[in-house]
Image 1 (cartoon, rainbow, N blue to C red):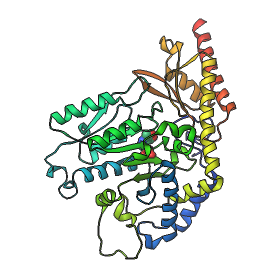
Image 2: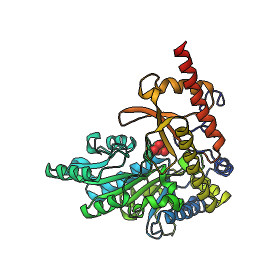
Image 3: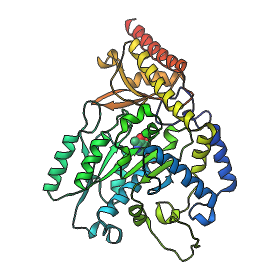
Image 4: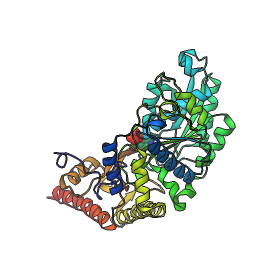
Length: 409
Ligand SMILES: Cc1ncc(COP(=O)(O)O)c(C=O)c1O
């Protein structure tokens, strides 16, 4: 039933929503986890697992450009938990009373900012932290879907004039809809000057730091106060491999500190996970990330990311060569596109997708971009080849031809 009633996200022709094909090392790690079931809540109960996670995260933190001797970092269930952690840490940092008295104890009315393309997890986070969904200020984007800095400055000035208290700005690396990268350098400067916490949601796009080809577009990322990155979106591991990093270890520990009478005490440098993160019991998430990187090595992982960017370019060329129109600009392998027949309302995106899904040839999604529904294809599978791309475009062409023929009968 799992084989039959399931969208096969591990297939090389699944070009959908940030689900890579886990490598063998990731599968082995998941099996080992089930066997040993280590509990990472405290260092004492699983020293090897805790140390391996710390090692893995520090290697990746170094790739981002953080000072690895002065950061908080831990694994999370995914991008949403990492973003949640960032908002709670930023709130605790900006409003020290928040921890004891909650929002009702504040004289301020905290608000935070992200682009209108920023991830929907922040709506839920605003709701569940008690900030309220109206605390999110969505900043307009440019034509290329990047946050507009002038708009941000205007909104913050207006909100402050009305007595609101801005405390956080979120920049995205790789928006879910169109793969846009917000202007990180400008955002970090702006936040530094205005006393705001700067969080980078790089849940999917974080892996771009691994290759100089993409890292050149991420200037300023190393100045983020906190960052979300999810290995399960673009590092060939199975789901549940979020990562959270912050340059402010004390702010993070302050947000999650707790004392219990039954804890065992050992001497080691950092606080146990149950005292410094949202989770209590902790799975050994880091093993699959470590083993996957160890299986092929960082240089090969860099090449894989570059390969997927190459495949994205092949897709762009194939589409343009067959009269499709690209409607997003991204350095990442995410392509949004449409066709004249769709623009003229002669066939809808959903009708084409229905046929594509029925054929079982490939899987892509749709997205609402600048008020129009368009096709969206994203390459996160290291096994996707040029041939898969040609098969996808061939299939789309065939669907349109058959549809045209049907209309002309
Ligand atoms: C940019 C971004 N942030 C956060 C998330 C939420 O991540 P998760 O589903 O791992 O909780 C996603 C999910 O796709 C995302 O694309």
